[in-house]
Length: 142
Image 1 (cartoon, one colour):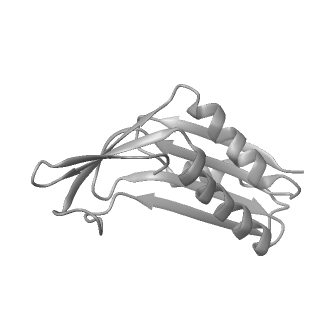
Image 2: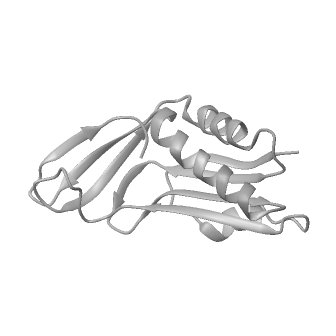
């Protein structure tokens, strides 16, 4: 039976070990993770990226939990997922996902479904700030 053990929108740095601990289970033979970091470039930007500023709709925590629940539906996966808001510098973690399951295929499948759905459905927006001061708002997800 799937279980979402952590689904959070956070304004403090994300902690991968805490996500791994949240899905720790002796029945899980596989654990997959995804870490989304702020990078120093964007193919569509004219200048290097200095930071990303994320903001979230008040319903984002519930939406994130729903995304994780739907991704794990019909599996035995355990899910922990967080998305950061606020100003993030290059190298900061924007998204952390940990999925534990009895088998690797299931763990990979659920982890990928969570991040892909975050990108299209989570009501989080980002403002990309370039080193020259240019800033661009980008749509859903991060």
